[in-house]
Structure formats: structure tokens, C-alpha cells
Amino acid sequence: MNRIKQAAEICNQGVKEFENGDFQQALKCFKEAENLNPKLLEAILNKAAIYIKTGNIRLAEQEADKALTIFPRSFKALSIKANIIAEAGNLDEALKYADKALSCSIRETEPLIAKANVLEKKSKYCEAYLFYEKALQIKPDDITILKHLRNTATKLNNWIQAEEYALKIVEKTNLEEDFLALCSITEKNNLKKAAKTSEKALTVYPSSIAIKLCRAEILEKLEQYSDAANIYEEISRIKELENKEREDLKYRTQLLRAADDPEKLKTLTREAKYAQEINVFLIKAAIKNNYANLLSETIQYVVNDLKIQENPSAAMEIAMILIEAQEYEYAEVILNNPKLKKTGRIYFTLSLLSLKKGDDIKAEHFMKSAVALEPDNVKYLEYISGFLQKRKNYKELAATLEKLYTIQDKGNVTDEHNLIIFSFILQSQDYEKALKYVDDIKIRGNIPEAILDSLRAQIKSRIAKT
Image 1 (cartoon, rainbow, N blue to C red):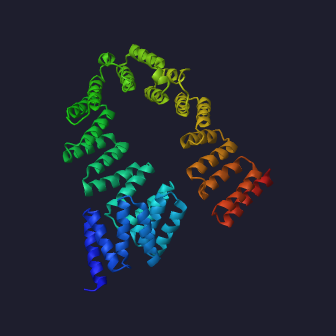
Image 2: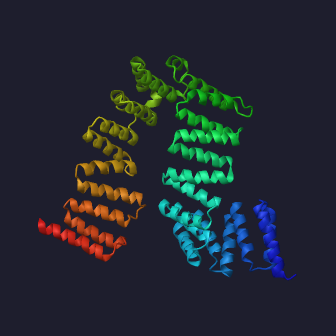
Image 3: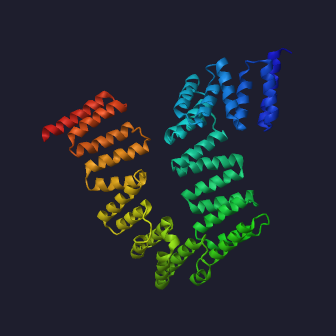
């Protein structure tokens, strides 16, 4: 048998070992195959793949470089190189390799995934999603691609699409970790559906503590406290648990069994870990049963609680429950507590409360205070933009949108966003700034010159009218 044929057969054996998870034996096969045929690309690339799997990135890059020396236009080698460089954090360089891989082949998944991976790391999730979708069109049943799409959809808060992919993955893998991901994603869309999903997951993995905990948490959110308590109690009996975990579960069981009974809740020790939840349960029970005295008493306790004064998130959670129940006065008492540490989130909640009460001026004032503390918070800037647009304060609106889009677009404002900003600068009647902005767009954007000329014409027309 000649050396080339023998190398190919040994390489094929290595692929089988690789697929079976025996990386050591697979690596041995690939090395032997490469010794027989130093130009056997498959052996070199599979060695790189093993090194990536086992975390030896330096050796993986050496193999990719070796492959590119022999085959400079190998889309697989270029894709591997792009992924390795991306992991090292050099995203612009990684993008060059991914683009080169795509120029060598647009009908293979590796270059598409490499490009999407780099874009995802650059936080360009929409673009990454599109490339993952193109890869899925080539391999519709590829689990890795489906997982990439599921994860990217969650980053885009596209929970409906994320759920569709998560469901496809579970149908193909039936793995515990994929069931947990499906439950977590479904919970964002529909709690009742998530409860059914967790129930099905338990029929497949009846002994899974992780799935049991997931189901209990979903039932809690549905306020099915008794059913959740039963699951926590069942888990607490598992021998393998550490004592601290067991005690926490027992206390949680007690807490949930008392959730609808204010008198029982009062008897529970306000342990640091569950003090907030006891307060929440007491407030919900008081609102549900119209217990005015209990509500007043609990609010007073919360206001005086040093731990809550130092924990704005806890105060905000209670305030939001009160706002939802239209208990606006009590929400104000919580949020305006002079001892409470004021954060962007507290001012944000005060703004929402003012909106509920129909006081737009106060709402805008509080939102501006939130922005002053967290100037790069996209949600706050979006709200401020809404207030400014409502008041037709176009000059300030344009400046706010410019800041907002600069953050959203990672410093490189898109042409579409540039045109929106320009329209508000024009409405503010600051024509000098409008002309300058058009010139700035020309330098940093891709808008055709004809459109830029049209924008300049609009400005000149406005100037002529004034």
C-alpha cells in the first residue's frame, strides 16, 4: 500500500476515534497520517480541532498556520484561524480571516460560523444572527448552529425565536442542559407553558435536581406556592445535599407554605437571605386580602430596615409591586425614604411612578437624575428621548439620540440612525449644525452623495423661508 493511501486510511480511523470522544487516540492517528503524508490537510485540521477541544489554543494556531502555508485558500484553516484570533480578543484581525474564508467558499458552514462568531463577540448580534441563519440553511439539523442561533436570539431578547430553536435542540438531543435552557427561555414568553415544559423535562430526567429546582422556581412565579414547596421539601430529603443547602430548602418550604397566611409569615425569623421575600409575601398578602393595617405595618418595617436602605434593588422590587397594585402613596414612602441610597434604578422607578400619576414634568426630572448617575444606560436614554419628543424639544432630543445611537451602534452610528438625528437637528432650526452634521455623515457613513445633496437642499430651503 502506498504512503498516501495508507495516510488517508489512518486519518479516517482518527476521525472515528474523534467522533467517539477518544481525543488521545485520534491525535495519535492524525500525527501518524501526517508523518506518512505531510500535505494531508484533513489530518492537520483535525489536530487543530482536537487542540481547540482540549484547550491548547497555541498548538491549534500552529496547526492552522501550517495548513495555510500548504493551502493558503483553505476555508477550513482560515475559519479556524479566525476563531482562534477572535478568542484572543483581536476581533478586527479575526474578521479579516473570516472574510477571507468566505471569499474562498460561501457554500460551507465553517466560514459563515466563523464570521458570525466574530460579529457576536463584537456585540453585533443582528448581523451575527443572519450569518448563523445562512449556515443553518446549509445544515438544517446541525446542533451547534442551532445552539448559536438560540443563544444569539436570547441576546437580542427575541424570546419567541429563541424558544423555537431551543425546542428543536431538545427534540434532537433530549439532553438535561438543553431542557433547562428551553425552560429558562420559555419562562420569558409564557410561565404556564414553561411549567408544562419543566413537567415534561421531569418525565425524562425524574432525578434531576436542577430541573426540579427550575420547576419549583417557575411554580413560585405562578404563585403556586404549595406545589413549589412540595418540590423543595422533596429535594431537601436528598442525602447528597450539603447541610447548608438542606437547611435553606427547608426554610424556603416553610416560607412558601406560609406565603398566603400573614400570621404564619410573621412567626418566621427574618433571616438575612429571606427577609426581602417575607416582606414581599406580606405586602402581596395584605394587598390581596385588603389588610390595611398589615400593609402599613410592613411598609414601616421596610422603611426602617437598614439592610433595605443599603439595597436599592430590594426597595425598587417592593415599590414596583405597590405601583402595580396602584398603592402609589406607599410606593412613594419607600422610594423617597431619605435614608435610602439613591441610584439610577431608584430614580427610574420614581419616574415610572410619576408617569402612573400623570405627572410628566416630575417623570422627566427623575429620569434625568437617573441618566446623570448612569449616563450610558440605554433604557434611560430611550425614556428621556420620549419625553423630549413629546415636548418637541428637538435640539436636546437630537443630542440625546446621538449619544443613544453611539452606544447602541458601538461607536459607529448607522446611516439610518444618522438620518433620524439629522431630521431632529433640522426641526430644531439649528441650520449651521445641520450642515455640519451632513458633512460629518459624509466622512463616517455610506450614504450616497445624491441623498446628501438632497439633505443640503432641505437645509437651504429652510434657511430661505426664514
